[in-house]
Image 1 (cartoon, rainbow, N blue to C red):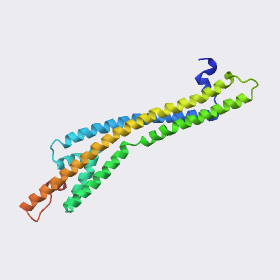
Image 2: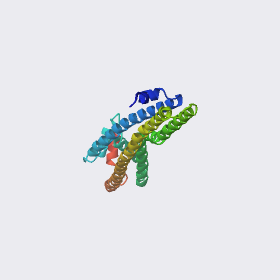
Image 3: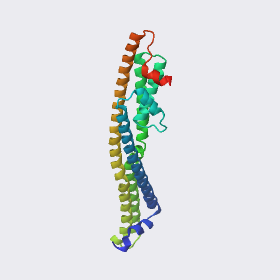
Image 4: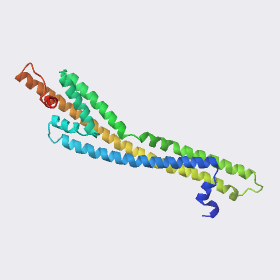
Length: 246
């Protein structure tokens, strides 16, 4: 490449506005890569934690003991936190001897709230990636238009119109376009990838919530039927009593 069209020289000699545009695009690119690495690590960790908890949940251990183990964890997240929120509501409503349907409705509401909050934490950063992916090309295009306009304005002030006279201005303008695409393309690809990945995690967690609700519904029905047979005046569930008694 000729020395007159060195990229570094074109950037340093560009007009102030084009330099500001390039700086903004560089910052946007760096920000998007930081978010990409953070979200990749966060989603990978969330998937592993969910798989470990599901293995524990379906191991056949009593829900009351499982709840006590989760309760002692200071950094609950993902399915662990969702289970904790739902089972806490289950125990609270059993303690008040609420009707079975009210208990299940209350647990479902808490599970949905817990699921939604965990999903918000999981998807933190997606909005920024979407914004960078959609806005960066237009910012680069703005720098391109401004650079080409300056190039032709300079051409109008020269006595002899040659390609060499406008080449630097056009080149610096096209660099702004390239930087806009460089910032936007990874952000768009990462947004689509992480949206699909977080969507799969959400579906898996939602399925777990449905299975947990069905399990608690069956347990409540079985315990109340047993309590009515043994003692018609007592309907307190055994699993809830185990936790509350401790």
